[in-house]
Amino acid sequence: MRYLLDNLIAKLIMNNKKMLSPMILKLEEDMNSGNDNAIDIFWEKIEREGAPLIEDIEGDEENSIVTVIWRQDREIDNIFVFSEIFGGWMFGEGDKKTNLYRLGNSDLWYRSAILSKKARCLYTLIANVNEEYEWRDEDVIIDPLNPKTYTPVRDEENPEDIALLVPTENIIEMPEAKEKIWTKERTDNKTGKIHMSRFKLKSDKKERRVWIYTPYGYEEDGSDNNLMVFTDGWEYINLVEAPKILDNLIGDRHISPTCAVFIEGSDNRAKELICNNEFLKFITEDILPWVRENYKVTKNPKNTIITGLSLGGQFAAYAALNGSDVFGNVLSQSGAFAWFIDDKGEIQLDSEGNSKLIEEYKDSEVLPIDFYLNMGCLEGFSKGHVEANNRMIATLKSKGYNVTSETFIGAHLYYDWQDNLANGVKALLVDKQ
Image (cartoon, rainbow, N blue to C red; front, side):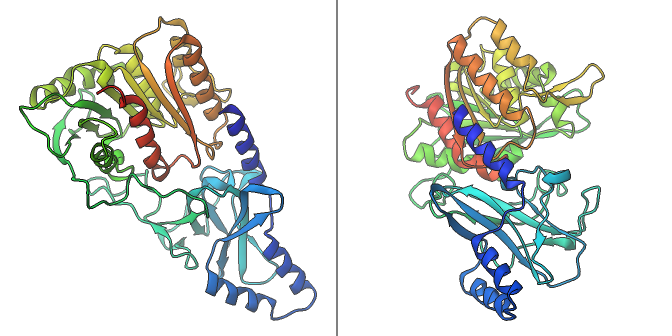
């Protein structure tokens, strides 16, 4: 796993550089040699075949050159591509900025990257980005050359949620990308039900939503169901599509019937999820007793999973370490283990990938906890993020924990966490019927 990550992060570094596709190199040569029709011929080809450009790399069977292009139709100051495939978080800094390049004085703007032939990822074009990385809504461009788009739902109670920077993104789907089977609509599998309640933590200014998923065929007087607990509940329901994933896993008999609790995040998400004992008690002393009183769910830790993405992955590991009598399984998706709160109460990133939580696991006795941890190969945006995940995995394995780790072809995105959520659930619940 470590070799794979290092190898792919090296490619991310290459993607920060100005690289040209063979097709654009040829176009530039033709234009420089005086072929005035070259650019028109290029656009005619694009209109027939679409974009982005996907071209082979000689001697490389695993990757291709992908080039995002835009045909200028207005005056602009600049145009950026927002996508982790170019090695930048947001729009990058300095020589890592993810701006598109203009080919001479033509109307062609482009940027290339090396990408796995198995990848499927998202990107957005945004023009006129200022020095503070701000833009107007009208400068967000849905690539007109690419018909594949992704438009997630918006939270009606939080329509300006920062989790969704733009309403619609384009999809790059490489030739060998696997079908997204776990979020695919099926006619043969029945769907579960979702019920919503509201709870209030003492420090909350308002009540927060808590959703309870019950699988198809759930019976109030039946046997106990497995239990999953999710932080970032709205995002897991609507962006990761966890209920649909559970429907399909249960319908295909990969796991036995499972209920799930989805807890809405707060406006102070980072401080809530970074090793926060108050939030842990809110879950274990307020929410879960109510759930167990009203639903047929297990009290057995070995059939109970605490699940989180990014900082939620760190919280999941913290919750199990400090509550192994409740949570016997940790499902961490791209866990942000390198983030911590300093003595001044400020949120910081350890660029070396050190983590107080990892040290606590190293120094504590081995507890009855199983782990699934994953990381996307396109997540090298913050120094220390990947390193901390590697360190957590190595620490857990050295202690003798049962650990399943996975590197998926994707980025730090809800869209990419969908199918590998299914992998984590299977890893933790199969054989625990």
